[in-house]
Amino acid sequence: NAVQRISYSLHDQVGILATYQRDFAKNLRVTGGAEFRYWHADHPGHFTNLFGKDSINALTYATVDTAGQIKTFQRYIRQGDLDGPTGDIGFPTGWNLAGSKDPTYVTQYRNYLGETPQFTVYAQANYLFEKIGLNLMGSLQYAWYKYKLTENMPSENAISRQLKAAEVSQLGLQKEGPVGSKFYMRSGNKWYEFDLINADRTKGFLQPKIGFNWNATKNFNIFGNFAMVSRMVDLGVYYNQGRLNPDVEDEKSNQFELGFGWLDEIFQAKINGYYMNWDNKSARIQDVTKAGQPGYDRNGFRSELVGTSEHKGIEFEAGLSFDKWLPVKGFALRTSFTYMDNKWSKVLDAVKYINNVRNPFNTSALDADGKTYTLYFDELEGKPVASGPQLITTATLSYENYGFFGSIDMNYFGRDYLLDGGTFLGTEAEFIGVVNNKELYKTVYSDQLPTRFLFDVTAGYNFEFQKLIRGTLTLQLFNVFDKEYFSSSDRFGVIPGMGRTFRANLSIGL
Image (cartoon, rainbow, N blue to C red; front, top):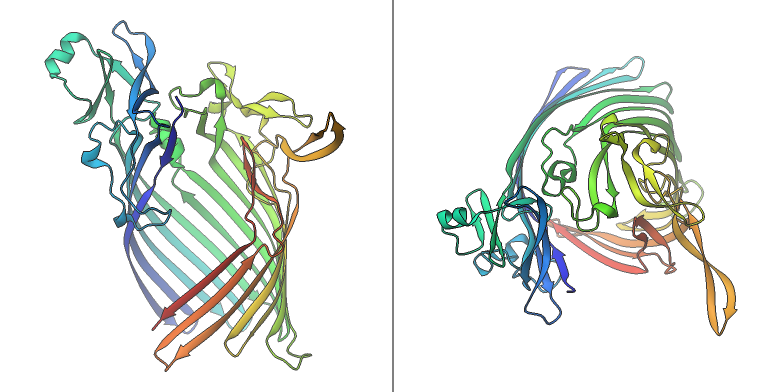
């Protein structure tokens, strides 16, 4: 019973922003403001291809039967999809939900609505000590949000209750579908009742930030800042594949930065170090033995709070203008270097053990020899966080003059850990030889993606027409040499990067 699925996230949002700025003294400037935003997002998921069949029994749900035992049943499904653009790009107003075409949601495996109103107020002040060139900065922000989640049909991992014959008769059930806060399904001559999630989560964050910038000399400056940042928990942890987790904590972070800079007519440079810790950080985990069980998707994945991650690093960037030496003005060279060290520093006690048994983080982890083993939550401490390349070097030769601009960019990426915990995947193939006219290769395993150099080219022109219309034409060629490389990974393996790609962009404004 093969099926092909497609999932949608149809978003729209509105917002309004107001700011106020006033100089209370020669050296004191205060800025305040408020912002309101509202997000609305439909998340339907359809069975778009049953490969020639009209209907099949392919959607499995858990249920508590009339004897109180947990069992499973299968629901028949049909092929269907949204009405919308034929391509991947379309405005939200161009998509029509199945609605009356599928009142029993028999062509769908998920359908929920997320709504998020958010309100933010902030104040920021800057005070300049002119005599010593010291600028002090401080800001305070309060952010309030409410996340409302409404299910139109039960999640694949919801647990139903099998109805007794008397209950079916009393309810007068004839058709499947939603009725109030319940959803009714039928399999054969048995009926099942689900509770639909209709819940909201309201939180408010107070986020302070302080900093300084001291121009010690005409060319040399020192800067630093500290911030406390909070953000709402990952939806996957809260919604939890239909098993709502209302008590989960939001993410919080303390962030420090200190740096030095140099600036003159032809050369500028900046180097800084930073340290951040993230509390209540989550990760995507997999346990294939629990695939389809409450809290896990059909492939055994779920989002789980892990604990605290530690992020520290050094950043350097510099720029050199060639105007002093070249007859043609506008040429410059820019370069940057970033080194990061991101690790799990603490694992929550609540996830280390379940019923006094070690909780597995990855039941299909691979070691350096490609052998499968189980990585447990309590083994994550001190292990890498998979967060993209942790070593990045760039160099750019640019030109900008008389409205024309262009650049040649080189980018190097390294220390790109494949998975949380530093486990391994097959990343390369080593040629062994030919046996029986067949080429043989040996898989090479690594805990990092292979390093990669990529080159891009950009050219463009800023124009103005009769002082009324302004615009920019930009032409870009990415991965100039069409290099084959891996850009990221997940627990299924490595993911290839983008090949040679051309992009043109025209922006016009008054």
